[in-house]
Image (cartoon, rainbow, N blue to C red; front, side, top):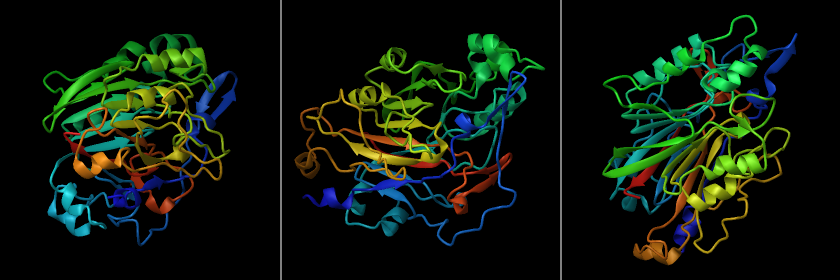
Length: 389
C-alpha cells in the first residue's frame, strides 16, 4: 500500500518574512543595548481562508498538525467524528481508532499574551520577554500558569537575560544600565506554584509527566548559537557539541530555543542559522516532537519519518536555499510495517515533528495575525500525536 507515500507527503511552511528581532532588534547607545519592537500601525486585512480548519495542515497516520485555524473554533482532535467528516483522504477512518495527545506549541511571545487553544500539553520554547525585566516576566509567567492546560513546559531564550544569573550579573548593564534586576527574584517567578504541578520551567534538565496512558519525558535547553552576546549563547563547534551531548537519549519531547541546522532555520538573508551540532543529535535521539523558535521568519512545521538504515551522524537537510522554502519527507520509513502494523527493526515506526513555533509578528502573512496584549502575533501551532505512539 504505497498510497501512504503519496497521500501523506505533507509540509507546512509559513515563511513569515522579517528578520528575527532576536538578532535584529538591537541598537547600541552609550554601551547600552535597547530592544526594538516593531508592530503594524493598523490591523492586517482579513483573509477569507484564515479561519479554515483545512488551511495548512499536515495529516499522517501518526500526526496531525495545524498552523492556521480559527482560535475561537480550533480544529477538532483526530479522534472525533467532526474530524472524520472534514478529512480529505481515505485514512480518516483509521486515525479515529486511536487516542491522540494534543500539544500547543509556541515560542518568542516577547511579553505578548493572547488567547490560546485548549490542549493536553502546552510547550513554550523561550523568549518570554524582550530583555528579562521582572515586571515583564511576572506578567508572562502569571499568564502561562493560569492557562488551563494540564501540563505546561517552558524554557527560556536568549532574550530572557535575567534567567541566566551569572551572565546577567556580568553583562546585564548592557541592557539595563539604569536599573539592574535581581536575577534571584526573577528566577522565583519561574518556580512551580505549591499545590499546582502543571507548570514546569526547564533549564538544561528533563522531567516526566503522564498523559493518555503514556509517560512522556521532556528535555529543555534554552541555548542557541552565539549572536550578539545574548543570554544562553554558546559558540559553534566544540561548545555546541557539549550542549547537544547533554540531551538524554530516551526523551519523547525536546524543547530548544534555537533550531537545528537546516530545519526551519532560514533567515530572510537566506542564512541557515540553526545549530550544526544539534541536527545529528536529534537524528540520533528521534524525539516524537522537537519544538523551537528564535528564527521568527522560519515559523512552520515538518514531519520527518526516519529510515532505520540512514546515517544519523550527518546533518539533516530539510531546507532549500531558494527563498527559504522547506522540504521534507512525511512518509513512513518502512512501508511494509505501515501496511501490517508491524514494528520493524527498532520495534516501532520512528518519526519526529519539527515545529518552529515562533509567534512574534513579522511582515508577511499578516492576514493570519491576531491581536494580543502587546501587539500582533501568530497562532500557536497545534500538533496532535497518536498515543500510545
